[in-house]
Amino acid sequence: MTISEGAVLPGAKLLRMGEAGPEAVDLGERLKGRKVVIFGLPGAYTGTCTTAHVPSFIRTRDKFAAKGVDEIICVSVNDPFVMKAWGEATGATGAGITMLGDADAGFTKAIGLEFSAPPAGLIDRSKRYALYAEDGVVKVLQVEDSPGQCTVSAGESLLDAI
Image 1 (cartoon, rainbow, N blue to C red):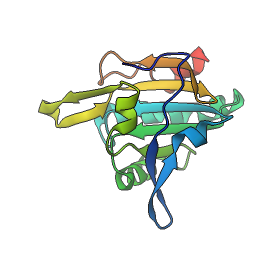
Image 2 (cartoon, helix red, strand yellow):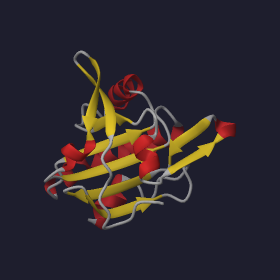
Image 3 (tube, one colour):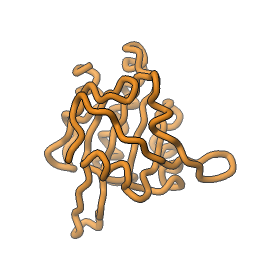
Image 4 (cartoon, rainbow, N blue to C red):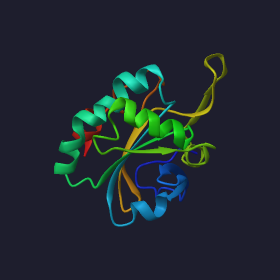
């Protein structure tokens, strides 16, 4: 079942690169008492993800902060090594966007936003979405109809919705 507005985001362990290597991030703890944007996408270094989705949140970062958003998190079904390199390559890390890997798609499946496209080599990947949560409760959820689109899930669209 797909998560919906008003629902509590499930607890999850996502991965990031720390100084000593990969480290777990407890998403539930990270959301407590905070206003957070999470955007999910099919994969690091893929076309629309790299040329449209990530840049839309880089462009809007300061406007989200002005609305009281504490953190913007990008989640992809990739390992933390790839997420670190991709964050650096796109400028997302430098812009203050947190890049987290959902290596086993556990979080993505728990919120019901997984899909597979075997001809493209995408298995158990994330649909393209953006959400705004307060204290772990989803207030706004915007999911694309197609993983190749970045309209309702773009930073500007989510910004307008909150």
